[in-house]
Image (tube, rainbow, N blue to C red; front, side):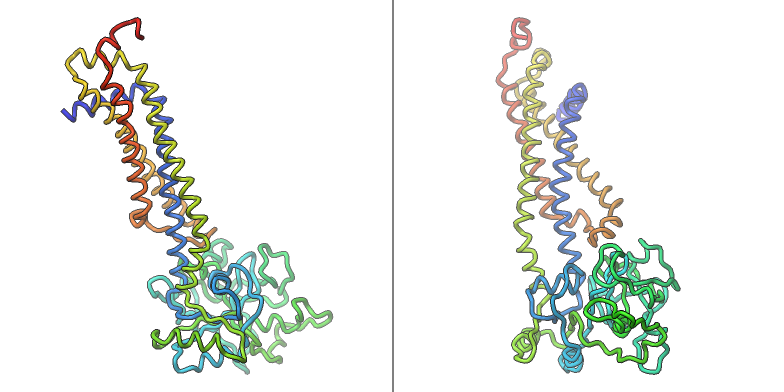
Amino acid sequence: MIQTLLLLASRSAWSRKASLLLLLLSVITSTCLLLGIDLARQSAKASFSNAVAGTDLIVGAQTSPVSLLLYSVFRIGQATQNVPYSEFERLEKDPRVKHALPIALGDSYRGFAVVGTKSAYFEQFLYGARQNLQFAEGQSFEDYQIGKPAGVLFQAVLGAEVAKRLKHQLGDRIALSHGMQIQQTGPSHADKPFTVVGILKPTGTPVDQSVHISLAGMEAIHVDWAAGVPVPGADIPAEYVTKFNLQPKSVTAVLLALNNRAGVFRIQRELENRPDAALSAILPGVALSSLWQTVGLVEQVLLFVAALVALVSALGLVSVMLVALGQRRREMAVLRSVGAGPRTVFTLLCLESALVMLLGVSLGILLLAVAGSAFAPWVQAQFGLQLVPLFELKAGLAAVAAFAGFGSLLGVVPAVQAYRSQLQDGLNPRLN
């Protein structure tokens, strides 16, 4: 019986394919919107969390936790003040600290952030499920020591996305720009080019969109600069920079990993309450929670808009079926005349609405899955987001299931009207 009704419902829908196709597109769009918003939300949270997997504390100049997190880890915004290098050295020697990774920011390369750090960064930095960075090609730069040739200073390691988008290979020479420039239009350090010695494998984190150099290398390109501009007449060739003191005066932030994470709050209080230094020490997870609370209103607005679109789509299904019902009165009467009872007609119309909703939702999920797979590399390159699989979107899938159920349930409205109609309503010409 059900198979027969399904066959009748599908053939009846096919006979009105033009109007139902537009409705189907509406359901597909609503499904993609509902699920897409949750996909973007969960992908952003996963990508942000993966970027700080191995860090217990982030230490920077006194500022808001969210601001420190954004510029130190995600290269968003800029620090107003730096941390004295002596503070980094003190943290590095603290027996409670497993390792301390300095981060120096301020320069860029063709829109990508330049990160000054130590070679230990490539061994000790963790991301995702506490994974280590790996090289696709080449090796780490060397930490400069007195007596080494100047060429050691000018070595760079590229993130995967930098190398891919700019088509760089090992041995290429690159000229950095002063300041966080979107395009390479600011003052240039072209007189002291860097050689690419390593290219990292993709991580799905801001590391992919960074150029890594040594702290001494960052000092070397600024030996003839003062107050953010070149000193007139003080053009110092690259081969002579080793004659200057290249120990950094400050760093932007320090990423700390502790030997015992149970003491993280004690160390945080010590750092923030020091009378001789204005420091902020933040827990990445807590700062991320604050960030999500900040953008929570935007999430709610987007979800509300998606819900409204879904509601309009579901109501559109009912409207189309009610309008079509007036044109199908003869069809309903013929079904009744050959033995189909009111319950059969009721079930038939409910099945039609359910078929449209389920088909539209299924196609919407399939379309989003295909689009997500196809555009995942582009999304990662443009926004630094690694898209999560659709089966992990529990909230989004629940919303889509509720949408499908609600739309199917609304099919009862035209079905009730058809159930109440009399046989002669469709057979009497004067009523048509």
